[in-house]
Length: 201
Length: 53
Image (cartoon, rainbow over all chains, first blue to last red; front, side, top):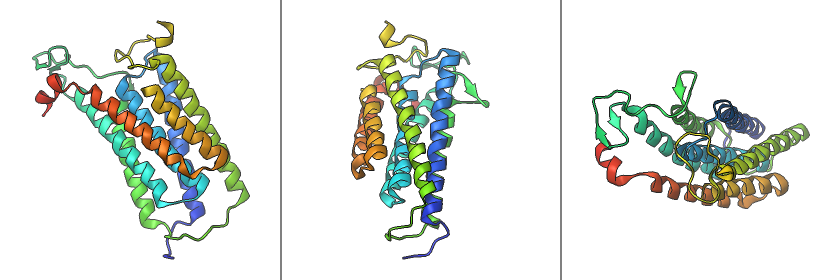
């Protein structure tokens, strides 16, 4: 066993905080979506898939105990998420690109940003930041954690808190799945940012 | 497709919470593969990629 600064209990608490942070982001996106009457586009939904997959990796650390494989789930999901976020950022980073013709243009508003801003940044830019923070957080925890396979003592309060937190993740994830079904059905999702639910068409 | 990815994630999380199942990374991986397929289909290579690169 190699000694580390982070005990398994502290590691589980940090993972729980990270997981609840992602739950908060997804709940915030629900509020944003319903208050502005803007349905998320395909790339936006893919970023939500990636964030929820990162949350499952953190939830595995919380429920099953910290393990490198669980951090692997977080990293693989974050790689997918940052690829989607960067793609969407690049689509809107150049206002002189006309999406309709696929050609450069002199009109600076030919390629406007998608959706509303949050704290001055569009959501896909926040996506890049969130997935980058995920990489950093996993890297730092890997540096500081104890490399141990010994079964750890599990405080009862931590188990109850973990069960409650992951239960909340299940509820948010199920709500997101129902919303995606109502928006997209079993086919492609709309990309116009409007309020046209598949189920009401 | 997107609905399938979300359902897979939900299933993995339910079994993690309910049974502390070790295999829940498998549906997560499947959801990410579905996501990758949707992502690649969304890229309009013929009109966009030539200019962006």
